[in-house]
Image (cartoon, rainbow, N blue to C red; front, top):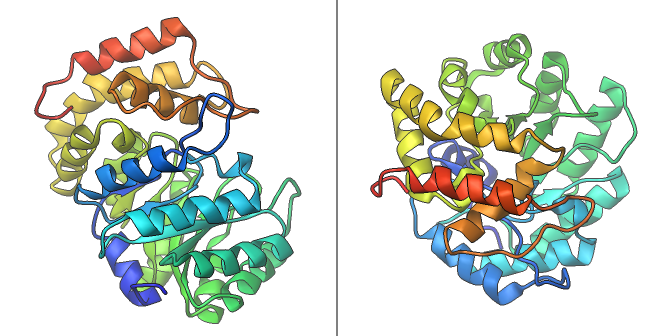
Length: 308
């Protein structure tokens, strides 16, 4: 059973840094539950607003529905009381509804609704998709605006009216105009989450738009650095943010941008580089090359011990 009401969950995830733990795989690409559970315990020991199990960084797209439920269940059972666990929901509407039910069975506290699989859809169709999922669960739901599910401000406002358990809007597009319009219309009705790849790059300007939190993939392997960066953002310490961007985040994104899918692969490489190996990525993703892993390790080694 969820530990938070939807309203409580919305407030909680908006008050701190969020992270999407990687999903641990063995060399044969099977799920390594013991290693995954140990990592959830490690990450939950830090001050986080919530953990999103089997999310984008957790390779949701490569997991079967049964595996998604197993991963979410493992996260729920491993996280200490008070650490929210959110589960992924996606694909077509019927499958999304089934995954929402699985999230409740697993004991998740909330849901992140990913874009529908493959097909484009109208705003009316997207709204019906979200409404069907929200009706199917008592859990708080965060919608993820990206790819083939980019929600207009009008659609988000409609959903906020028709779905009492809609608690959050995660932006993976970077459209400042839409973000401004959504926040201007809905204010504190929703929690706003930065969801672009390597969200640290956009965190400070997005804070001005009411986006109080973001999902940090870097937190997986450099939790100290990620939390230091987040504190600098929330305190609007421009000089510190700029320095950390220059020292690590921007060179990191240069490696990430070399190949499609590296936004996930580089996180698993970072886990290996910091002694918390999580195994390979599953196809269709590909792992970093040995040379790229060495470059990443060199970047990490330059960081002050207090932030790494």
